[in-house]
Image (cartoon, rainbow, N blue to C red):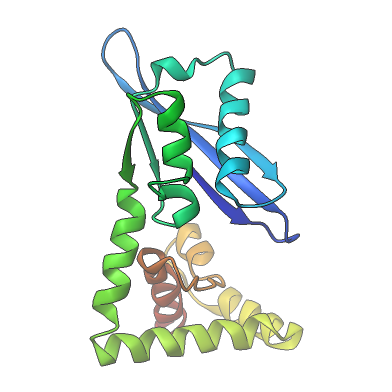
Length: 184
């Protein structure tokens, strides 16, 4: 499993995770590395994945599956990462990541429900408003401290949550945080 992202310092990072089965047939998923890459082309990413496996002494010959998002650099059938890995190991079948598919399905569904679009838009505007002003950020912190939260987790949960436009399934955290602060 691999995905690329741009970090806060505007550097491209490749996240690599491995799903494997032990001798007792227990399934494990492990984060392996956060790998800095120069670009997001398929060759760079597939070379980076193979480099990570080589450094960990993990043979690509043992790979039976691969999963990425649906971006052409990752899933492209002619020269995407999945094709390049499959050329090296034909048994490494590609599946579009279920997490990414869920986000795409939620994104498509939510666009058809006006009240949800409005609620997400309002939540986005509130988080941007607070995030862009140290004074408003300080005011929010005072409100959080004055609120009577039932637990420390609720206090932490009511913090600033930034909405990511491509991660629909995590938007609930931001909305719940705003509702909890409002209700206090």
